[in-house]
Length: 168
Image (cartoon, rainbow, N blue to C red; front, side, top):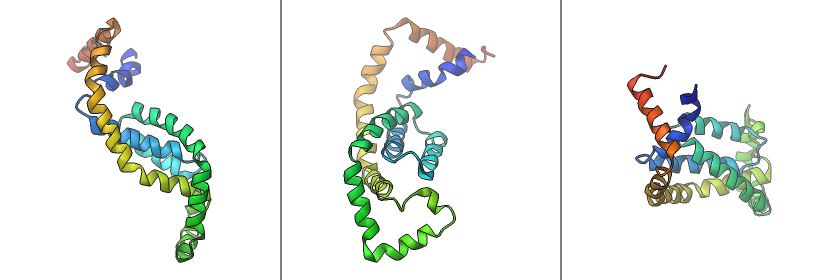
């Protein structure tokens, strides 16, 4: 039981070769954090975060940070979403999307949701790139800092026990 509970913590520090997974987790966390939490887009992005080989802890940390950022940029998102919703050439597309079966639950007819989603889509690549660069820079330092503590040896030993099949 202890192994199951400690596995996410061990994976946070044992993912030195998976900087892209940390970056994918940060990116999905950014998208989830920016959007208002009462629509189907959040559920779909959360399923992606859980099911893809992305770093879940990094995604949750990014979700927390970008939830605060999302609240701060709501007026900007409202203006951006309002401009897109009122853009005359896109009006038939919005009508067609809204008449689809699940589309009202996506809430893309709300200016803040659409604006936050557009900002999030615009920030996908920069967030991925920054997450990957920060992982490359700080992973070795973080590993050295964590290996100084005694509990890290216990966790590494538990991981070896699981790998060797000694833990049931």
